[in-house]
Length: 253
Image (cartoon, rainbow, N blue to C red):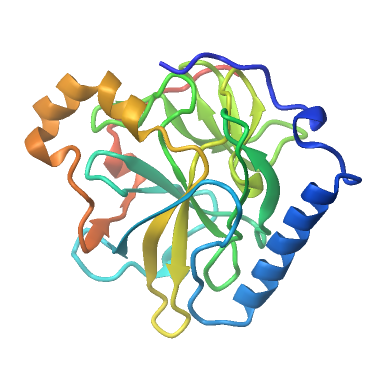
């Protein structure tokens, strides 16, 4: 289990006068600008913890390529990546999502989250494993999910009822409140403008997979057998949240 850590403060990352931070923000802006001119969006080249995995096509339950344009704002979808047992939130936000350059893992590794992809550059994906108690959506029940934000918050937030950690998907799943020691890891997406297809290609940020598999080893083995730690493969199925978990726990922040 991850130990709680104090919320991030400006002192953790410096201010705009810090040359390192200025360079990182400039890099993220330049990368985002270059991506906007291309049809296929590549993995973010940031100086933080990025991990490349197999290039996996997102498909619908019928096995056809999932169309980015079919995503609806406010209707969360889920798929498993980069392992058969590791869930991911797929979201379309209300507006274009820019790269967020001043994030950090619990180990203080700084990184930039990728910008949104898709026709309106508003599609993002994040690991659905809470960075604190490792809560995750299961077929029977989910304590972590996408919810409407309160007054003064973004319109969509990712909220874990296990510890009341709240993450902002428009800001690289930055921790808004609660004991989570780091943002949710971003899942890197490639969108093909010609086909409207999406591929998952890696992660950016603090992965929780080792702790996740250690904590839930028996449960995952019971449910999935040897497939739990298997790679997602050439395709992974995208499902509405209501189909992925039978019950989504409600809770007060």
